[in-house]
Length: 103
Image 1 (cartoon, rainbow, N blue to C red):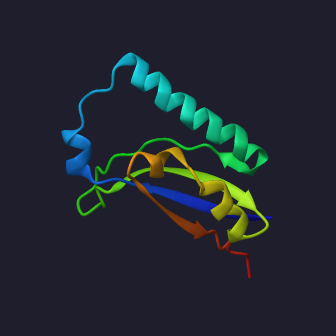
Image 2 (cartoon, one colour):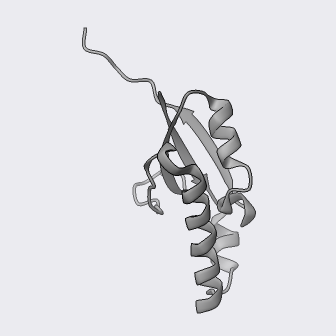
């Protein structure tokens, strides 16, 4: 199995302009994420968390991450179909982890 790092990107200006969700909207968003997690199942190594840039020069468009495992990128791509982050207008970058082995 290969591990894949998902980087969730957002437009910071668009996020700042969005109104605070109502409790119902917040619950709907969490339900969408939970439904995706149930569909992804054992592929999820680390569900991840939201992030915010704090160091000088850090990319403010990185809004969170997840770590998944699969036999191929195609499997990951199928898991991302209908992902709640993209449904909210964000994008997802996928990186294959390249483990370093001791020489």
